[in-house]
Image (cartoon, rainbow, N blue to C red):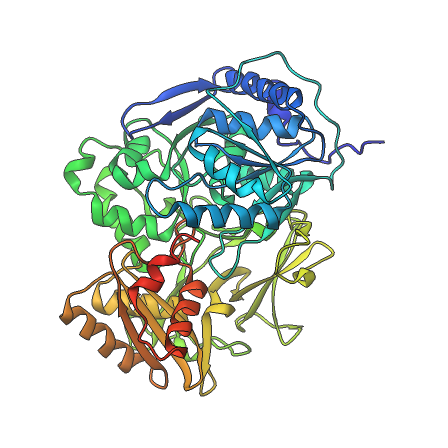
Length: 562
């Protein structure tokens, strides 16, 4: 007998969609194509009928290579309605190697154990090649799905698999994270409660719809909450960031989420003339996560757009990961974001954090990611297998109803990260007054003379002292035969800046071998969600140096899309 879910499911909105709620999609950042939630529900039922007619069965794992917009939403919910399991996948990049995308797709099909690939014409030929030697088959989609009457939804239990999320691969290979119906229902409800979402709200998003922050934050949560959505593709945001700001300044969107680097990008690309007449006074939450939040960037953003009514309290630092569906902790609304300055030398695992004066050398400003968004969840810190008191650095652990079932059996990652609704995250951090402060990833750190250095700290120091931001520079830490090393990959080629980078590294990170690699524009390896792929770049560097070569830009370019 099918067990009834303990909280509203992510498909309940389909049965009684709010007619007034709209999903608006912009192909260019200026014009908007509106679809009511009612029409979206009818298209989802149409997708369900189409899938059934074409042999998609309950339990099938369905890769979705569908462009952002109403068609993706219809395909996603259509699969769930018939008991299939959607697995959103990035669409082919407009530029870049088609062979690299083919390798990427084959890897996801294998890791996710996918049965069917639903795709449009832009991905059809690649999907055919990717599935040729594998067991999956291709189901093409042409145009939009027909609107149909409601189909009888397939029954499910709380712990039945609902979604396969592919992790971004920023710290290694992609992993297929298994998300249950309960995981998804609990996390979307927790986010809605945390952000106090109501009928007067509107969520604006440009994030990739095939990653956790864009899918669960930018699509599923607002749909479950029956509020308006204003969406554009990442490429549109890159071309027209002022168009995204108009969501808040002209159309009165109230909530959004984005990574820290997006704020840096806006500060570089948007001037005051582009936002004349904008009013951000109704903007109530700018959730900032996916990477460590930079205090300086957040403050600059608030100061730049304060004239338009943006309030620093709107900044909402948060922490989450695909292994816990999405959100874990976040700052409370209507409160000022909190940051503390700590001595970098005290940020080693097992060490008590020591505060230091702002602006002093060897002092880092670390932003609080708030408290658990789900009051029934628990976050704690461990070192050497034991819980540690507040203020001591260790690995972040999470126990919550939103913690994923685990990884696919073909994922290379060890499944011992999950146990009884708990997950050890691989992230370093500490707690103070019940709030989580994230330091970095253990996989992106090295230890020198008893002190631990994190890549995020190197990035922050270089930004503060040279002005080169994370869009144009990535630092990678690792061990070499000659000892711990820092590799800085930058798309800046001015000799004076490169010299400054090396000098600052020598001054602030003594004891590490230093290598600076200047590469072509667009050559820094990034995931499909925009995060730097530090481990892949380090592997390329290590291979080159093992062969006796300096780290050439070609190796970084060739691997950039895989």
